[in-house]
Image 1 (cartoon, one colour):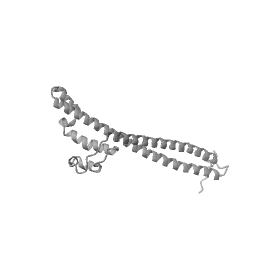
Image 2 (cartoon, rainbow, N blue to C red):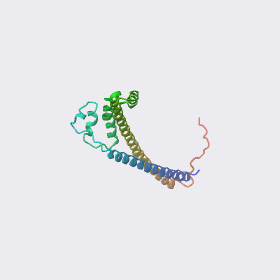
Image 3 (cartoon, rainbow, N blue to C red):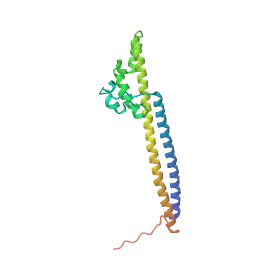
Image 4 (spheres, helix red, strand yellow):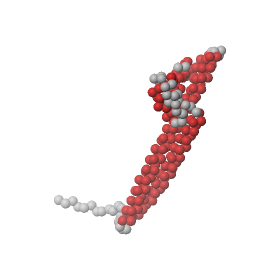
Length: 193
């Protein structure tokens, strides 16, 4: 095969790869934008605000070190949602009967159907675990958004690198002699003594 033909074919294949990487980068950028915008808007609608700086809620060693950085802020990001779920709601749930485990509290309430106090606690535990789960799901989607952002950066970077290689391939194809072969078979040389 002629070297010029090989360079042109390889460069054309490189163009296909560049197009695929640009499309992948655009889709990953869209995924990042969609997920992060959704996380932000869904969390903002809930209007959850972290306890204010110096409040008794932040004095606890199980809560304060994790939430001090967000004191008084509205909860609008995935990392904030995780901190609130794991270090505010989870701590308060652990202080409830049955350590705030819904299945255990619900089973106890079913075993004692006349205990109205326990039924109310089951309802509170249910609400707390539901909110915690939703916040952790928002955090998970924010992680997906971050992964999509880095995937888009990688795709666009690789597309740029490949575009340079394609350019070098076409440049080389113009410089190589028309009769140059890519794989030439030469006869083995006799060994000299």
